[in-house]
Image (cartoon, rainbow, N blue to C red; front, side):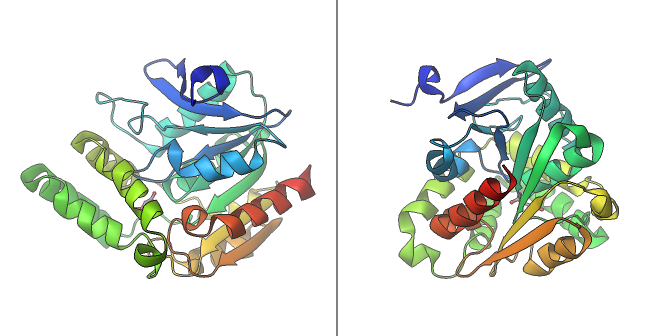
Length: 273
Ligand code: MLT
């Protein structure tokens, strides 16, 4: 059974939010997984299960998502970053390996820029360092208006369509349905606040050259939301980085091709420890 006693769905109170997290396995430097928008920690279930026999692995629900309910506060990438650092402080984690997918990657990049001493290595999955373009930003705010006037259905349909590689709906129906359930269980407020957080994020590309820790970059070849070119760009800028491209994967490569993803992840973790 998945209970707090065996590491699942634990809760820790930060200053003004309760964070729900899974904390499995043992080891001196945990890997902390940050989910994308608008998912939750369950998207890392497969990676946690795969790695927990050899190291400590933690996946948390970001403020406003999953079981970390928070309707009151406006969301920003800086706020997610300070939550992460406060979370690490509360759990007495001095240093971690940080792994973020998409919006989780925006937070990982911001965190390593602001608190480089807190991270031993970086894993960037299906993400990018650029800020939204003017058009991208306008599109997010238009979407927010549409959601506020007409609800979430249209947003969900459009969003889900762009997530997966083209064969997922046929070959991986169960995974697609599970992720849809996670996406559909968001509140309107967490969706609109998350969209604002991403629209208002600042670029982190100008800091990439100062990243000094080993970095693994993973991207699905068919990712249309944060396309491969973005990962190639980061790979060119981060000195100590390697790039792994996963075929037959779109924006959620850890879910679409878990075996290949886990192989790259564990090879990287073994090489740096
Ligand atoms: C995500 O998966 O976190 C988002 O799609 C990223 C974004 O929209 O910029």
